[in-house]
Image 1 (cartoon, rainbow, N blue to C red):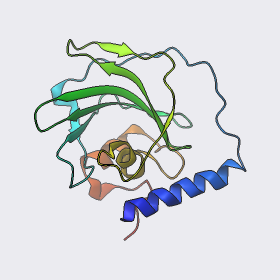
Image 2 (tube, rainbow, N blue to C red):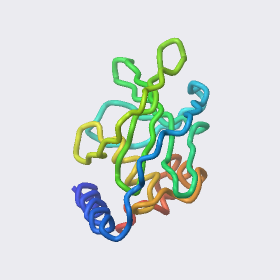
Image 3 (cartoon, one colour):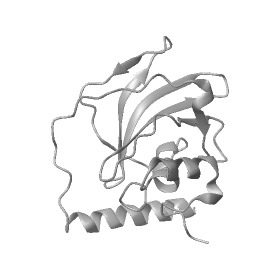
Image 4 (cartoon, helix red, strand yellow):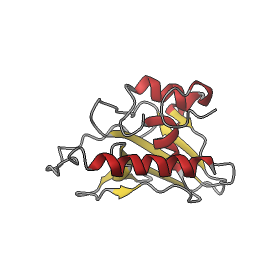
Length: 169
């Protein structure tokens, strides 16, 4: 699968670069300001895999991308039966990692996690939504996209994808 090879190449680049640059230092987490709970009209679907029946959506009003920072977004995953998971997450393009910052409740409130761990983004799983976000929409190699508008353009219409490592013909 092309994405598996691309993800492996990204991982190899990150490993090679890690000897040349220092890894992000662990700092006490800054106070997290959670966005409003996602409204149905603000949810933007994105493609993950043709073999997955779940729907994956990003709250386009919650996308927070700053140069040299982690990408933060609100993610909604809906199963065919109607079950829904809402999370506030961060993706670190430099290290191909993610962490869940808060979990949405049915009441429309957030339940913030205390010091959530960073986890490796894995390619090839049935629910490869984080790999899809990192590889195809949010990251430009081991860096985040320049701004939220580029990411939203890619999420809206994949033909306009001008970043990421998915540039192969």
